[in-house]
Amino acid sequence: MAGPIATGPMSAEEAGASASPLRRIKLSDQIAEDLCRRIARERMEPGQRLPNEQKLMQHYGCAKGTIREALKALEVQGLVAMRPGPNGGAEIRPVSIDAAAQQLRRFLHFRRLDFAQVYAVRRELEVALGLDVAGRLDAEALQRLEENILACEAAFAAGEHARGRSLELTFHDLLCDASDNALLAFMCRFINSLLRDLVEFQGSATEYAAFGAHNLESHRQLVSAFRAKDAEAVGRIMQEHMCCAEHYMRRLDASFRRDLLSGR
Ligand SMILES: [Zn+2]
Image 1: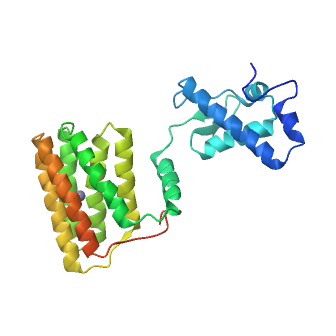
Image 2: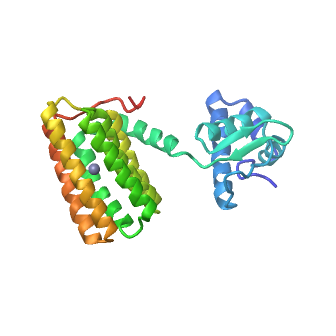
């Protein structure tokens, strides 16, 4: 069967032989894109394999190097992993959250994202997430939230503010775990990771302590509302919590590091 880009009697590789190197790179990109469409069309799942190199060469009418380049592009994107050996080949992988988040960070790097913009989105999404998981948290999930609050209290009591802040964000990551809305959970988790990695504080120890105390109190109230399966209360408490958190972070002179490329 001829591939969608192998047209006419001349193979795509032959046609590209006299073109610039850019043309040849483009051919492998076209093949990579066609393989993506095939994975979607045939509803292929992680663990399944694409046809081997020989079959792909025949299908697209091009040389081994071009196929390898296309597969390499998919591997870099995290969509396949190359398996060695006689039965080896390109195995489909679920794209990891880290790979997706890294791409989004790189996209945002040159967009001059600031702290207020991040909070404008976070305010809305965290409330939506709270409502989404309000009736969904089982005993185990509630216990994890309570353990997180205890760990957070211990960190603040020991004066370990950075650790306390990281644990505070973990509370919100635990809510993501309970959601079955993959997009909402991804966006909330992504924002948590930005705040964890990129926000720097210059405030005093007293202000830090006040912020920590506010967070803990909000989290305790949220767990009570989750236990009661009271979605209305969850929405209200989360909204207040987000507004207060933004206010405290401003007082702490939180600044956003500019480097989203390396993540640090
Ligand atoms: Zn919080």
